[in-house]
Image (cartoon, rainbow, N blue to C red; front, side, top):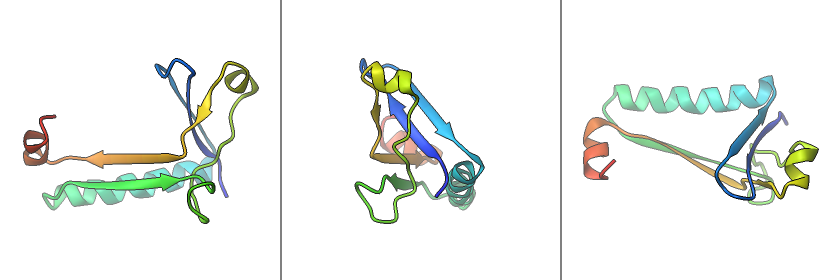
Length: 93
């Protein structure tokens, strides 16, 4: 499994992303798939999970020591949305 961690700060105002080549590949493939949906005029989304939430989860819980010492928390479930113009309008975005 590659490295792909999203760490939220204790104050919840800062997000850190830690990735290696394999983790970036997973993210890139999902974003490419969503871009293709948008090109076909369809809004889309994807979910990524840690192994705490899904046995074959794509996300890791790895964080820097300073993140852990400062109360950082690994995101267990990432929801990523891509919206068409109509989808943005319909969802007040």
